[in-house]
Length: 127
Image 1 (cartoon, rainbow, N blue to C red):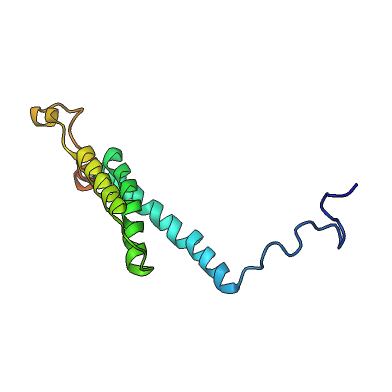
Image 2 (cartoon, rainbow, N blue to C red):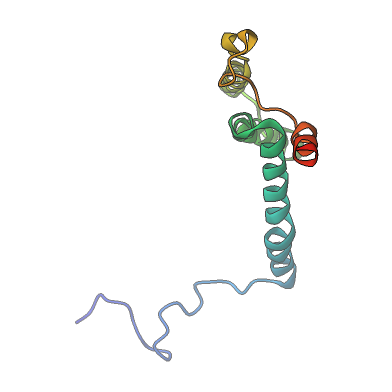
């Protein structure tokens, strides 16, 4: 039977296929896992508490815009007209999604935007 993977060399099929991570790579991985990820979650949940879940979810629209800007500034990547057009569409969509509905001006509690964190803390403290 030929054509299958060779098991010579101690039976390890993956020997030599995966590089050994450097200490700097392991430190970067630890920093991402122990600092950046928890910090991002804390910041996002604070944003949810302040702005409400609907508006906080809009931060995901900023990711491609920031990635394009960082790529252009840090890596000198070209920004073409399609990229600019996509960015404009993303920003227009985020603007449309954050507009206050007309019913909010009439006193409808369902359509009212989320109140700030200070007001919630004050209500818990006083009530």
